[in-house]
Image (cartoon, rainbow, N blue to C red; front, side, top):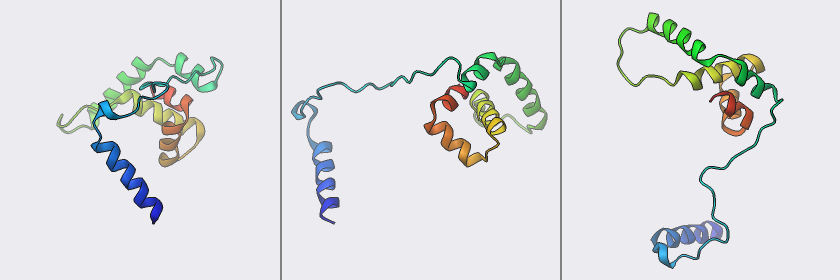
Length: 112
């Protein structure tokens, strides 16, 4: 309980302290960390060889046949097709694929 109270106090102080009173960080944190992937990784090779624009056009045609009206935002087909490809090559359910895309860099690369 005391740990929770001390953490809450630290967070409250950090949120209410003006930015010019905070101590600067020794190294500035990058907002866009870069993870290097090997060129011969199977998902990298697959991503680079697939014609994604052709796949998106085919998916859009299939979607247009099933769509009743054009209400709402258009889907991000590239990410969805990457996720479906990941599910197919790894034979995994949706939730596992979602976790892989969140934490595994080659799977994120596959999803664009």
